[in-house]
Length: 253
Image 1 (spheres, one colour):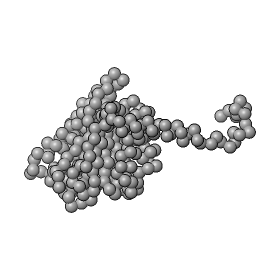
Image 2 (cartoon, rainbow, N blue to C red):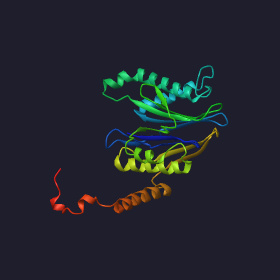
Image 3 (cartoon, rainbow, N blue to C red):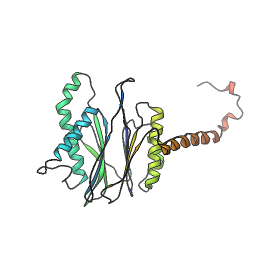
Image 4 (spheres, rainbow, N blue to C red):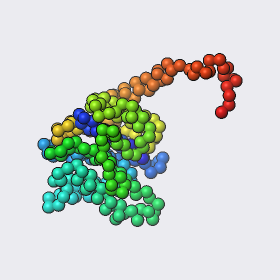
């Protein structure tokens, strides 16, 4: 399992991915799930991956191989992020068509998905979610973020905080809280976290951060969020309809 998230804001895009993979409780390893492709002044593209590791790695490697051939459409010469998402979907389908049947014979799940975003000169920033079948959707003002992998534990904080007007620094805090909540509830998601920030019309990445167990800021965020939640919970009033009811006489559900 994994957890990746990308937020498309008016000011830029924030990307984050964990690094844990596991094939059982005794087979845990770390693999980078974020790939960046930058041609300064022309384009900046970030891809996050989730699912079968061999499928995602092969799909991205195939995308990179196509990029070495200037005589065909590739991520370095297409005119839009829509084209990049389309190319990535085609690579995913190609790998699954080649390997899917063999994996199925061994009861191996060949599903995979990607989040790809960034900006190519001549168009606005864009963010896409590429499904296992190779089709994709685009983020908009009503849905400014995408998650893949273990999404349910980190989603509530994103829903409450994130909108297109959220500042980049606030979005980074929210993303880290989202990861902390996910890691506390699911051991298959874990540090290190790769974080990247792209600002509107920069055509290069403003920040690439590798967050480990020793990172003091993440430790501070985790502790203060936990302490804050406990404090807010303790301050909540008890239900009014319990005031006149003794605990031992509560109705059974």
